[in-house]
Amino acid sequence: MKLGIIGATGRMGQAIIRHARYFDVRVTAALVSQQSARYGEPIYPNLANGGVRFQYAHEVQPEQVDVLIDFSLPQALADNVALAKRLGVAIVVCTTGLTATQQQYLQDAAQHIPVLYAANTSVGITLLRHLVQLAAAVLPDTDIEVIEAHHSAKRDGPSGTAIALGESAAAGRGHTLSEISAGVRAEGVRKSGSIGFSVIRAADIIGEHTVMLAHAGERLELTHRVSNRRVFAQGALQAALWLQGQPAGLYGMADMLQLETQLQQLAQGMKPL
Image 1 (cartoon, helix red, strand yellow):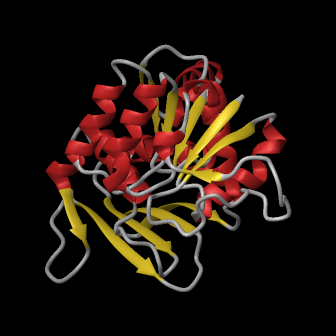
Image 2: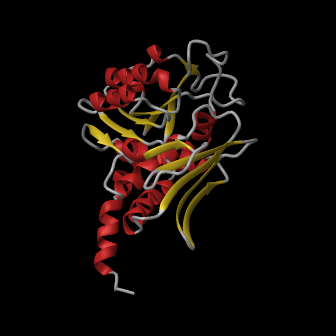
Image 3: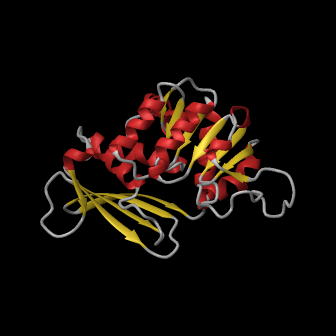
């Protein structure tokens, strides 16, 4: 598969370049912004001549890529989905902190091309979202707190993953997150039934998320920790390979993993405890 990376000089863009070869994927386009000082450089530092070089989006030709992966900034989303539509290729969008308007860009693009949106491309986080939804439904009277920690350079907070976990918890209670979110925990008495967020930004923490469900005398904590960014790169590459063969539409990581089918089959085969 021929892959184009948007935001190719960032942490995740670089991780995908390093790990693509393990997935039988060729990076054939590495896109940078007009302000990038690395334009024209080879994507592999030891490759002095030839090969793929960092380039601008308008230079990419339709035959150059099969799928795009976007790890750039939210403000570039409209241009990035427009690029995917111009090329007629699928796009995996991994940008977090999207507004409602930007989410609509994805909906609109999905009428024409396959789009997979993942606030977090970790397979473990995708499973965690389902576990959180189940726990919130089974424990309807518990207080729910989403605690997340990331490196000091991360711009948005709560993280897109933390918000997604909050949405899963709210769905388990039959609500949308906007209806019962208490936002980032600050002063004041906790409102019963609300979902709160705690945000930590420190040093080089890659990503940690805990969903706490607590009532008097007992609490359940569901936690996911990342120790290497390659898990995100691997998940994004898996998503790109899967998305290439899908019809136009809007997908998530759970669609790729067929989690709904897996959980239904598991439930049918389980014996009561």
